[in-house]
Length: 194
Image 1 (tube, rainbow, N blue to C red):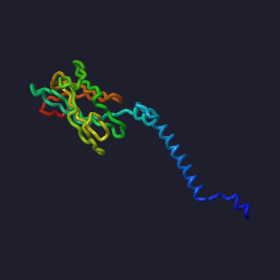
Image 2: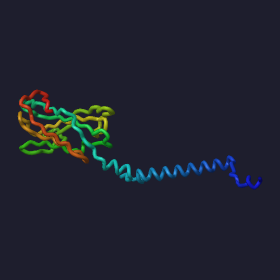
Image 3: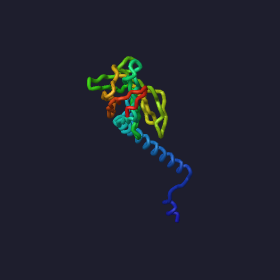
Image 4: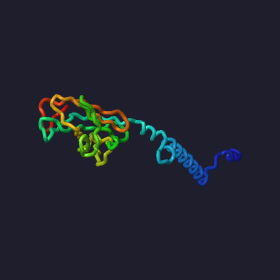
């Protein structure tokens, strides 16, 4: 009987604490290794599975209709500027840096790159709205999930009724948004362009 007692495990409290400490160290070490695999080493430019996936996932912009045309103050029978409402496709990860976006305005006569200086051709963020279901608009120029930006574009010349134009917004990465519209025959102070 004494021989069987010698083969049994020692269940003293000191040994139980030592086993718990070793198990805790193994779990923490495994978690540290897993975290490093996913995030990479601590560098200024993070590398790893998660940062690489975030960097390569495109931000897909959506246009919320309608586009609106604003009559030119000097010639109310022509469109002087156009607004477009943009938001991210649900499920997009990250944000679109609108400071680095390119805005093009094209007509059959040619195309022009719009800048952010207040001289035509130019564009500006004129509204920041909460996009449902999240609704978290802030005041930076990063278009993030839960935000909707109203972009107003003023080309270098006005648009006549019946004239076709294309508005292109190209984010720093991801697909571009291209919208083509024709100015309706009747211009109002705020014209629905569809």
